[in-house]
Length: 212
Image (tube, rainbow, N blue to C red; front, side):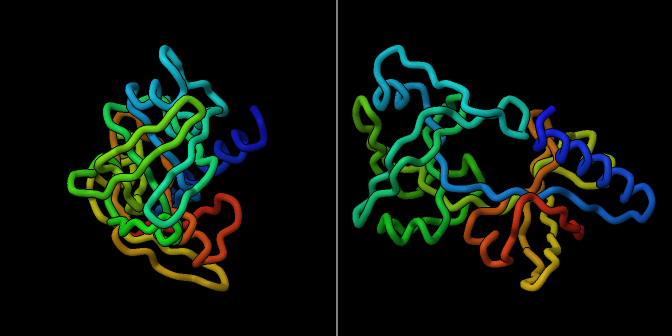
């Protein structure tokens, strides 16, 4: 195992043991930077006919990975360059940016859960082989907590439950409206975006307390 894998195993063990001893829920928190999920049709438009996304590195969520591929996101006012694509390909293309990113793009971005893109703004994606214009799908991801079904049951939490997250340190805050996402394809990890991480001067992937 590499350093990140070892750290994750330690955090999962600490979380389990802490809950068993104290009843308090501590989970690892990761910063989710701007990224793009592509449907198969848009993969072909951006990278060429018959193209398949290539794995750069696996992510902590089962079956998910960062891709070698990067694209530019173009809005009415500006462009975000070399934004990482995450795989595998999805049914619909989705672009996730921080609100600070949206100012540069000139797009009024709503805060939504992943997949809830109806009525959201679109943009143009630019790749080495062409462009893909999407009519909707640009969001700022709502902060959320991934848990497997077993982990959720262990902590007494349920899918779509809304909890709070206590961040300690010089810029300690309580994040409200953290949505639990539980079931197949999930493993313990909170995702917040770069604006939220910068607001608390977050370094690395700390453990934070979940308050049901």
